[in-house]
Image (cartoon, rainbow, N blue to C red; front, side, top):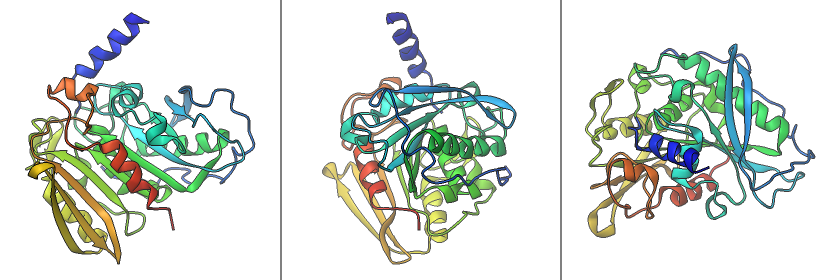
Length: 315
């Protein structure tokens, strides 16, 4: 067990880091998994050998400890960064802890060779194949657990955060009610974005001192990246946002920007943490902070994000 944890910690210290096609099946039957008994609620479980685009894929999932097989639960998919796994994202963000997801089902997909399609360093799958995998995961988890298909959400960090935007810019995005990204590397957004519907709620966290995905944009490890203000501006245009407000938090170290979009306050939001590097924002120590290295940040992304998700359901 010590060797396993040591290996996981070693992985955590590694750097995190298209044409969009309609998947073969993006619609699933709501409530298909309701009424089915789950033997290990509150414990992370694994689904191996899920066939998707002819390849064996995997993910893990965590049901609330008080899981009721006849109650529909919100579902959150969490996408890890490059050179890591869903398990490391789960440990880093603490999203399976009851304080964050006590009434939600958490799912942690695994990218092939530890990353997601979009950047040039990923060669194991195409964007279309990874999007199909997302649709297949939703169908699979809805077949075994009781999911509220109006409240499905996606989040991710770094390469996984960028892939969340890729999902939102594709037909698969119509499965989701809202999106959130931490330290996102938005490689595919430069190729254009056509959301399945508008407006789409989006929340993004980013460090002003990020040395991997620069706040000002430029060349990243996997290709050119937009600046975060430009990326936010593009989503503000797509979402039909008008009023923009900004507030300073944590003695001016955190800048919270919020837009009213199509008459909905806070539909698009952003937190810039001036002195934060490439990590998941947390007021407590976590693995990605160790990898920077740096100490805790003034805000806790996991808590803010879950509150954000709770405001939105799919129309």
